[in-house]
Image 1 (cartoon, helix red, strand yellow):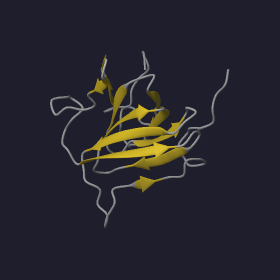
Image 2: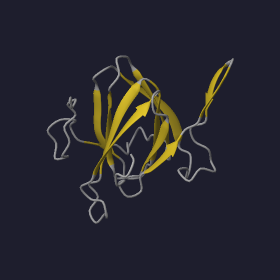
Image 3: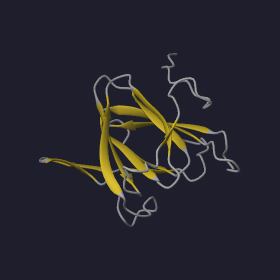
Image 4: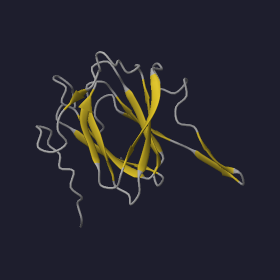
Length: 156
């Protein structure tokens, strides 16, 4: 992110990849990390090249996302009334070329796009279990919603 301003409550943790002759190890989230507040569940989601999965937010749940294979662009939008960063958009390129964990606080809209040439795999450690009867999942369409973001690739 460099010197870009982060949305209030968003945190970025650099992940250390430890290689040896047997393979690699990468810790994603520990209970003593500042990004950790509580454990709900862990899940894996994937996206094929060019696919956008957006927009969604949660009223109760914080997300802790990283891409363990492929590359994704994760985009956040702060639509929270009264937030000091209301209206701010953040972009993160995460995956095998940039190992980071992205902490996304509740009520921040987010989505992702696979920007590589093969399926991307994302691990999300969330603070709440998925409630099948009353999902804490609020959605807007990926394209044409009131969120000021265009998922098209920007060449230049």
